[in-house]
Amino acid sequence: MILNSRLIAYKNSKEPWCKERREICKNCEYNTKNKKELTFRDRFLMFIQITKAVCSCCGCSIKAKTRLKMAVCGLEEIDLTPKWR
Image (cartoon, rainbow, N blue to C red; front, side, top):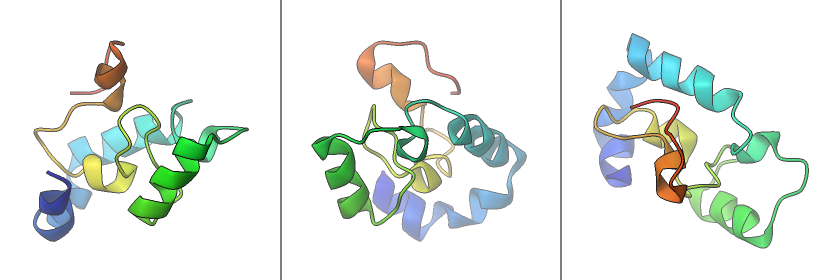
Protein backbone atom coordinates (compact mmCIF):
# COMPACT_ATOMS: atom_id res chain seq x y z
CA MET A 1 0.00 0.00 0.00
CA ILE A 2 2.75 2.49 0.92
CA LEU A 3 4.71 1.58 -2.21
CA ASN A 4 1.58 2.43 -4.22
CA SER A 5 1.32 5.80 -2.48
CA ARG A 6 4.89 6.71 -3.30
CA LEU A 7 5.03 5.48 -6.88
CA ILE A 8 1.52 5.90 -8.25
CA ALA A 9 -0.71 7.94 -5.96
CA TYR A 10 1.60 10.98 -5.75
CA LYS A 11 -0.71 12.68 -8.26
CA ASN A 12 -3.49 12.59 -5.63
CA SER A 13 -1.66 15.24 -3.56
CA LYS A 14 -3.64 17.99 -5.27
CA GLU A 15 -7.03 16.34 -4.72
CA PRO A 16 -9.33 18.11 -2.22
CA TRP A 17 -9.81 14.94 -0.15
CA CYS A 18 -6.03 14.53 0.16
CA LYS A 19 -5.56 18.14 1.26
CA GLU A 20 -8.36 17.74 3.81
CA ARG A 21 -6.74 14.60 5.25
CA ARG A 22 -3.36 16.30 5.50
CA GLU A 23 -4.90 19.23 7.35
CA ILE A 24 -6.53 16.85 9.84
CA CYS A 25 -3.25 14.97 10.32
CA LYS A 26 -1.28 18.20 10.60
CA ASN A 27 -3.16 19.02 13.82
CA CYS A 28 -3.44 15.48 15.21
CA GLU A 29 -1.84 14.69 18.56
CA TYR A 30 -0.64 11.33 17.15
CA ASN A 31 1.44 13.04 14.45
CA THR A 32 5.07 12.71 15.56
CA LYS A 33 5.64 16.35 14.62
CA ASN A 34 3.17 17.35 17.35
CA LYS A 35 4.45 15.11 20.14
CA LYS A 36 6.52 16.73 22.86
CA GLU A 37 8.34 13.51 23.71
CA LEU A 38 9.09 10.87 21.10
CA THR A 39 9.34 7.23 22.03
CA PHE A 40 11.99 4.93 20.62
CA ARG A 41 9.28 3.50 18.34
CA ASP A 42 8.39 7.00 17.08
CA ARG A 43 12.04 7.74 16.30
CA PHE A 44 12.47 4.40 14.57
CA LEU A 45 9.36 4.96 12.43
CA MET A 46 10.60 8.40 11.45
CA PHE A 47 13.96 6.92 10.53
CA ILE A 48 12.59 4.13 8.32
CA GLN A 49 9.98 6.41 6.70
CA ILE A 50 12.62 9.14 6.15
CA THR A 51 10.23 11.83 7.37
CA LYS A 52 9.34 13.73 10.54
CA ALA A 53 5.57 13.43 10.08
CA VAL A 54 4.61 9.86 10.95
CA CYS A 55 1.36 8.59 12.43
CA SER A 56 2.35 7.08 15.76
CA CYS A 57 -0.77 4.86 15.67
CA CYS A 58 -0.12 2.98 12.43
CA GLY A 59 3.49 3.92 11.69
CA CYS A 60 2.80 5.28 8.22
CA SER A 61 4.25 8.39 6.67
CA ILE A 62 1.42 10.92 6.79
CA LYS A 63 2.37 12.33 3.42
CA ALA A 64 2.24 8.87 1.84
CA LYS A 65 -0.85 7.53 3.58
CA THR A 66 -3.05 10.56 2.93
CA ARG A 67 -2.48 10.11 -0.82
CA LEU A 68 -4.24 6.75 -0.91
CA LYS A 69 -7.95 7.05 -1.54
CA MET A 70 -8.66 3.65 0.08
CA ALA A 71 -6.60 4.37 3.23
CA VAL A 72 -8.16 5.08 6.63
CA CYS A 73 -6.86 7.22 9.48
CA GLY A 74 -4.38 5.35 11.68
CA LEU A 75 -6.55 5.75 14.79
CA GLU A 76 -8.42 2.70 13.54
CA GLU A 77 -5.27 0.66 14.30
CA ILE A 78 -5.65 1.38 18.02
CA ASP A 79 -9.43 0.89 18.09
CA LEU A 80 -10.32 4.59 18.14
CA THR A 81 -12.67 6.38 15.77
CA PRO A 82 -10.77 7.44 12.63
CA LYS A 83 -10.68 11.17 11.91
CA TRP A 84 -10.99 10.49 8.17
CA ARG A 85 -11.92 7.60 5.87
